[in-house]
Image (cartoon, rainbow, N blue to C red; front, side, top):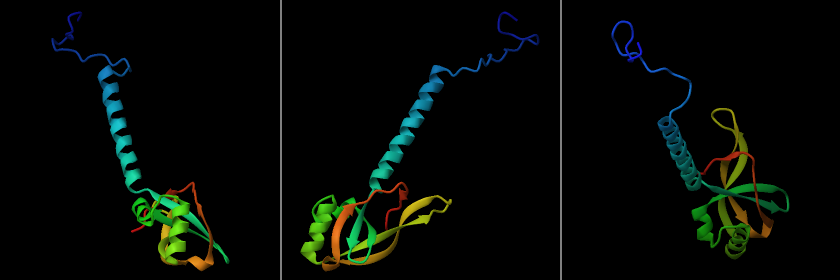
Length: 136
């Protein structure tokens, strides 16, 4: 049995001492890095920027994609405010908190609305602890 054969003359299985081999660790790290890089790329593609529009009567949260912001001439609240003042109106997606398919809360688009410059007092960046769902 000292030569690696069991009492029946067959090779015995290697002992499992509960430790991971270096190869297993490298494979696991590679899978983890690959998964994180894919999630990061997806998050960048689907990134929505939320803004709170303060009007005379209320406040609403709207979402714009990076492409929509670039079309307005910037990537922040001042670009949205400037475009609204220059054009007089903007069509955007209104966002509200809803439950997702698996029950978690998420910030999701609810309606396509028009903003009027004369009713809007202020545009602010808006942050949320919830996952942001991209609009169609």
